[in-house]
Image (cartoon, rainbow, N blue to C red; front, side, top):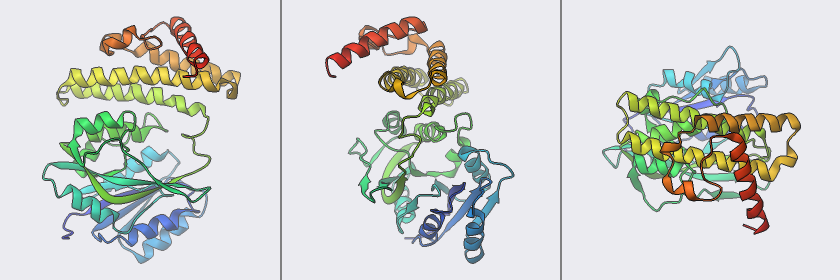
Amino acid sequence: MMQANKVSVLVAVYNAEKYLSKCLDSLISQTYKNIEIICIDDCSKDSSAKILNKYASSDNRIKILTLAKNSGQANARNEGLKIASGEYITMLDSDDWFADNSIEKAVEAIESVPDADVSVFRLMQCYEETGKIVEYENKTDKKCMSGWEAFRLSLDWSMHGLYLVRTDIHKKYPFDNSCLLYSDDNTTRLHYLHSRKVIMSEGKYFYRKHAESMTSSCSIRRFDMLGANYSMMQQLKKEAKEGNLKDADKILNFYETTRWLNIVGAYWYYFNNKQHFTKEEKKEIYDKISSALETIEVRRIKPSLKFKMGYSPFKNFKLFLLSENIYFTLKKLLGR
């Protein structure tokens, strides 16, 4: 295929010496050659910088940005985003890798549909402990869909968020610095929402699943999702106020309902795992849930939930706890 349109690949790097070479090897061996590889070293303390310099000395497509202080993955990616010059942008974590033809397949897909703005990779989950590779199953059979459909599917990750996107969309909606662990989530959803069409590609993204992954282990950081959800709602409201959100009420109501369900889900997670948290962590969790409740707009929540046990929206924290504790206790007793 013709390779007229450049692709910018953002690689945020922090203490990645163990995996970095595999990541970079997968990029320099891409069958799609018109790429720039922007590596942002987020003040690594290991030999990552040395590895980056070695690769950059032999391939002029590799650009290195070295940050003065460690500021997190979202900020690192945003610094790379500022200098990206491609027509399309994708990202690759420094411990992950692409199949040799991944970018070619992604570009091929997005350019096959005139109004497509996002091309989604096939996500291959690689379990580090066993070496097993399992493909992530998106809960849709559609190969092409509207941005609204992709947005809805992404809210509970019925469709994952690893893709190639048109640069103008990504630069308008950079990574969310307000929520460290969940910055990708908000960015993905905004990209989907503001896309005309989202298309599935055959390009494979290999995602390394670590045994100690923060998002898969029992961690208090899971509750940061509630703050990320609030940040997303504020962004959507801003978009609506500026007239950039078509069917604004429909979107805001749908997302607020999702946000409420996530609060209930967060408490369910706590209810089942409270024995793993310290007294100080329990207080922090209660504070996060209470703060989230205070910002809920009950009028926007799906009306049918108001009459469903365990899902009726209480803004009062004590009433919320009473309702959820009764509901979850019954749920456990009934084995559901």
